Length: 314
Image (cartoon, one colour):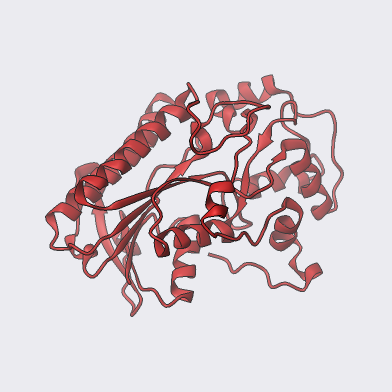
């Protein structure tokens, strides 16, 4: 088997490449930066420009599965221009990928596993969201994820099975949201955000990488929530981080109106409450290494206490 990955040079992409290589699976990857193209025995880079619909068709050679992670970061202020970039980057990437596959000589691709996000679920402190829920967030994230997933579905027209993994808050010490959460705590000003009782559905990056590879190896179809089995509230997450960092927890919390003033519409990323189920992927046979938040934080920030090697930087 050989896997083609878009977004392979990002945080999640590098973790997935690491897992694939541990399993002896070679990787082709697409990059918009020609200086990031490299060639080794088990890793081959190819150039593409989704904004212009350009793709090197050689990237599909001997590929049996595709993992799609491409898309502009949502962790930048949501100006009208950036919101358009967030949406178009996801749609253009999938359209370019599909057209390239159609025009290539490859007839061996069996499955597409595409990233998605739990941002499709509405803000709720009482609901417990499973993949078949009909409720959709009526804001920007709901729109983006709905269109993103619909575009991934078009690969079925090529006889390709499609799986979509709705990622929650990805925990990694090497990037993403967690290091930003740690900064105020390290500086003795850690505090819950908003009410603090909003649910945060998280996943350790190692488990997320394993989940994508599991989906490829088992040719999964449909939607799966990429979250750990035990979501926590923001105040619980903050408390556990302060314990690991050996810092105090400051109360009261940072008021929601302050976050909305500073972050604007993007404040929904830290204030929205989404308690999301991992039951479906577990029923497929996937096992989490990090089921609870405490062991996850210990692995990322205090591995020496457990006698466990720290996660390799990716």
